[in-house]
Image (cartoon, rainbow, N blue to C red):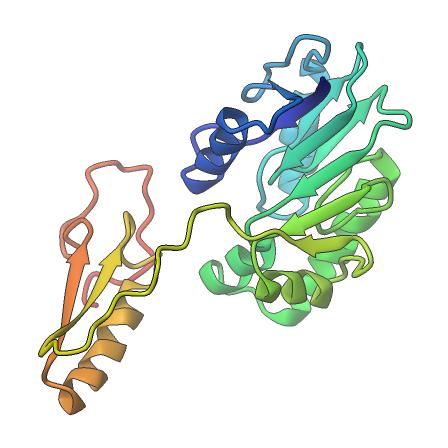
Length: 249
């Protein structure tokens, strides 16, 4: 039985769903040991709480807006450590293989959501990379020196991470593990329907979908678009939720 320490986000939407899917679908002969959320640890790998707090209160604000740091101490033997979406500091790792994963890239958030220029992102990544290496922080993009392998969910994401400095010899593509249904026979249909499902309409590209559909519908009147999402014109009652678009849009 292989024992794998699994470190990943809690309460962060799709990232948590992915970590939970890994945990609940362990292959035969593999035991996943989840590390919990911030300030929590796992049997044989307690959280170094004071260190984790310092990293997140002092180092994190001075670098890039990203998932918070995790800090754990490996006190027992693990055959593998898998860290998803977090930069991490691991004492007692020694020769244990370390795998890191990420859905896409932090560059997407920093540029597409926060509007950082290439120049600003390049400077910030260079600074973070120096600090990570000096402090022994492992990261799926900025410090793969001690990482055995890293992977993302698409070739596009791999190319993007390599564009921003990831070691191409260490980063792979592992597609999300959901079954692909067989192709549907659409012959004889008079209507073609597109389905958009997204919790955050604007953040998930809803306006782009509507704009593209408007162009298509002008040429193909048989096309339909079904939206399954909150009403984008109504403000989210949670004040902690930030809207990415102006109210006029």
